[in-house]
Length: 70
Image (tube, rainbow, N blue to C red; front, side, top):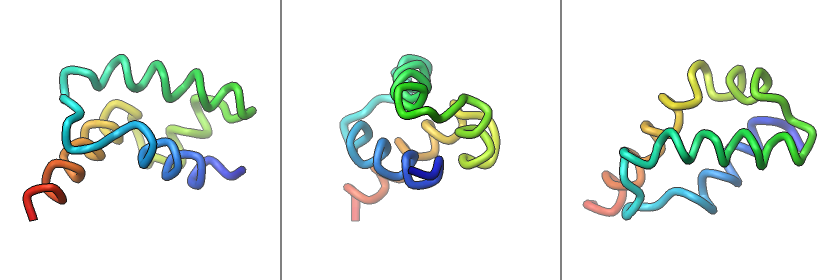
């Protein structure tokens, strides 16, 4: 699986409108661990995410909250 596909799948399975931004650091740890189990390195994830993984996770949380408010 490509890192981009992994990120999208992981995001849909782990982040929703109830996810708190205070959980972002723990979520990044979980994301990296899950990805490594799939043979995807932290560097590959960061590249697919367009930068820092914590920013990706925080952005995903914000998207989930905004989507729930629509």
